[in-house]
Each structure stands twice: as C-alpha cells, then as structure tokens.
Amino acid sequence: MKEFPMKPFTASPQIRVRVPGSKSITNRALLLASLAEGRSIVRGVLFSEDSRVFMQALRSAGFAVQIREEQAVVEIQGCGGKIPRDQASVYVGSAGTAARFLTAMFALSEGCYEMTSSEQMKSRPMRPLLEALEQLGAVFEYKERPYSFPFTVWGRQNGRGRNCHPEKVLLNIDESSQFLSALLLSGVLCGEGVTLELTGKRDARSYVKISMKMMEEFGCHTEQRAENEYRILPGQSYQGRIYQIEPDVSAACYFYAMAAINGGTALVEHVHDTCTQGDIRFLDALEKMGCQREDTEEGILLTAPDRDILRGVDINMGDFSDQTMTMAAVSIFASGPTRIRGVGHIRGQESDRLRAITTELNRLGIRCEEKEDGLLIQPGPICSSREKPVHIQTYRDHRMAMAFAVIGTRQEGIVIGDPLCCRKTYEEYFDVLAGLGLQENINVRIHKSTED
Image 1 (tube, rainbow, N blue to C red):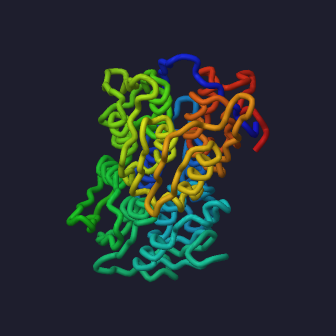
Image 2: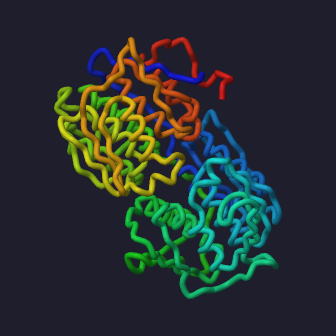
Image 3: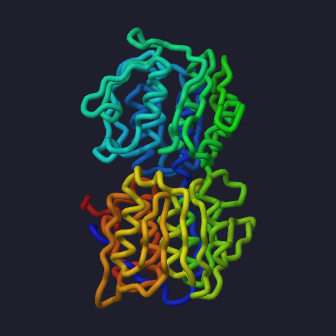
C-alpha cells in the first residue's frame, strides 16, 4: 500500500494500547548479549527492520542467535568478547544503532570485516566515530567516500591493526550521541581500559545513560569522571543473563499526542515514569501544554485539556529529539506559537528532519520557520479537507510518517505517503491505527501488501 488515508476521531477518544519493545534498548541488549560470556535470554524484543538487520548482522559474524518472534524472545550465545568469525561480510541497512555499534565492535576485535549499508545510511554521519576508532588502532579502507559506508575494517587486534593505547580518545558527538554509546558498549574489548574525552558542545545524553546502565546490568562499569570525560575500567567482561526490554516510549508518544490534540485520554500499557528512555520527557512537554498525567499500575494515563486550549511552548528537545516531529504535529493545534530548540542535529538522521517538517507543515498551510537549532511553528487553519486532501510526503523516514499521522486523527483530508517505512521501528503502527478506526478504508491491511 502506497498511501494511508487518515480518518479523524469523531469524538474525544479513550485510547488504550500496548506498544512493542524499545528499539534502542533491544539493539543494545543484542550487542551486550553477544559480547557476554555465556547464554543470554532477551525478552520483550522489538521485531522491526532495524532489529532484524542487527540480528542478521550478528549471525553473519557467526553468533548463535535463536529467535522466537511470537514470544518476543531472542537467545544469544555470547563468546566472552570474541567474534566467532574473524572474517565476514556484514550489512547494516539504514539502522544507525547497527551501523555505529557493530562498527565499533568489529574495529576493536581481531578480525577483518566488509561492512555495507543502504544508500540512506551512506549519507548519515559516521566520521567522528571512525576517527576515534582510528585513534585506538583500527584501520579502515573506504570503497566510495572517505569515512562513509561501504568500507573494510581491520580490528585493532588484527595483524594489520595498530592496537594503540592512547591516554585519551577524543570524540565529538554533536551529530549523534550513538558515537559515544558505541565506544562505551564495545570499549570493554580494550582490556587495558579506555578514556573518552568529548570535544563538542552537545550535552544531550539520555541514551548514553541507558548504555551505561545496561553495561552495569551485564556486569561492566563505566565512570563519568567529568562532564566530558568517561572511563571504561580495565579487565572487565560482560556476563550472560536474562534481560527484559522496556516498552518503546518513542512509539507510545504518538498515542499520547493523539489524545492531547483530541481532548481525550491515552493509556499505554507498561509505560511508567521509571522508564529510562529520554522520550519519556515528551510527556513533560505535554503537561506544559495543559495535559494531566498519572502513573497508574497499568501504565501512564494522559488526560488532555478541552480541545483548542493546548498552550504553545518554548522547549529544548535536544535530549528527546526523536519527538520533534510529534511536537510539531501537536503544536499546530495549540493556542499560541511553539519554539523547538536544541535539535539542529536531526538534519543528519533518516531524513533532513527539520527541512521535512517545515516543508510538510507549509504544505498544510501552517507557518513553520526553520531555525539553526530548531523550529518556530505558528498555529493556524489547515488547508486540507475531505474534498481536498493533502498528501504528506514522509521521505522514507518512519518518524515523519508516524508523527504526521497524528494530525490526521483530528484533521480531515490527511493522506500519509509510504506508510511501510514504519517497518524500521514499528511494523504494526498503521494496522493499530486502522483498528482504532482511523483509516478511510479499514479493509486494506497494510503489512500484507507487496508494495514496497
């Protein structure tokens, strides 16, 4: 199916849903289980394009990965920090976590690996991570453009690698905090320990905190010695364990946003304030706009104010930037302008997200100005209608598709292009919307289509 024609709620909704496991935590757990000594059982696994790419990459490297998708369980036999195959060809698709985390693992190993990616991933930032790995002695041979996929990597412990022991490794994470997470997660392969010093300006590190917490849960400790300095202690190793994945708070936010703009309620099962994911702060933003929130035994319940009295906000979203598109969708129904700050780095993600948001809001007749670090959005009348639908382009970006669908839960005439791009992180998203009565033709099943 190439398009998803949205159908708005006809009354204030009472939404109750369950979302899949967190992509960010899933792929971190898969990596840690592979590097651990012994068997790990990972429960609540997200099965999506990104996680499947990650699992297949681990299999390509020789790891024993047993998948029970119906139970959302993956078992991995770790090899105590060794990679079973010292030579392999590995494909990382468009998954940023797979691209960054696996590159670091291979670069700190004894092997030689051919790494390829999708065309989209070729244009996404990699250079700061690759330069940091070069400081540790890894050697890269680039097939097309320097510091981009595809490439061959010789690990620092390989005969061609240099196995350097710098006092500090310098790293800039302004373009992505995944660079730091990648080095932390696989840094235990440097048996002598490693110190990382950050050189940039970015201080949004909620996902880095997740990485450090999960490292401890698998048996290794990292010290943050100063604001911009991290130390992985020497002589550590991960241990296999049973690990439960949190629900994907990023996915939950779309349903909370739907309730917010429609004067309704939303409860996402098993999402609680104790969740470690940075996107939980999106609920703080909705509270500032006028919503109420209660952490119940079953999950967080969000209650919206009456329609049309959401407040515009001035907010720094640097630490939960994946919800920039969702905030943009909510803000067009607020009573005043919304200023989003701290998200300039999202120009280098699956799409140029600031440009994409601006273009699509302008297409709807909404005044949206792109700033150096974010957006200024002025609410106003939307030009779409049942008779004159607006076809939203999604730029093969799953978050653009999911966030702009939120608008269609209230506004007539919203048609989402390329809904299948959501397979990257949430395969059933548009099926769930259809089940909520939010599709013009509910008989069309999205994921059984052969269109791509």
